[in-house]
Length: 168
Image 1 (spheres, rainbow, N blue to C red):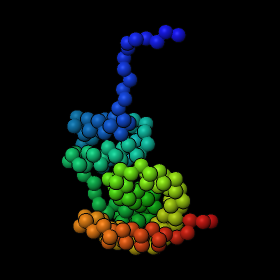
Image 2: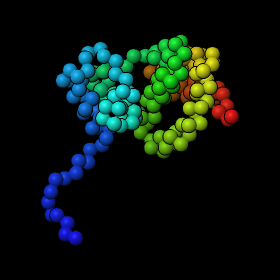
Image 3: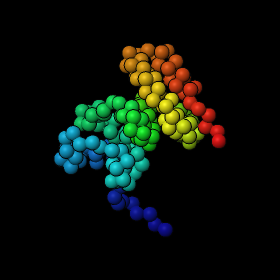
């Protein structure tokens, strides 16, 4: 079979870059109004991707000043009894240091154990204990912002070790 010697090249861009460009352009051209709440699940359905590249794109857009993340979403979700929204906010918070670390091995381990962790988190957020975790998370954010690695690690350990057993 003869292979063509020329022709259109393949677009080798990364999905997260494509999603970033598409969201950025939609913000710039006014498709999304200033102050409009952007929901990652709805945004992911638009180009037909998972929420991961959308979240990565939103982080980049926030760094560039085109979107603004509003803190306290998980606390409000817990107060409203919305376990799903609390879990999404929790994922966003814990995803920040994982992405910053850029360690694929850590990402792989987390992907492997996420179903087990998710079960334990559902048990926590469905209980009154879930509301207590908001204060722990606020402290974790404060320590990270202050650059207190040891303090942040201790709070993260306490948070993880206080999860209820995920076993049936």
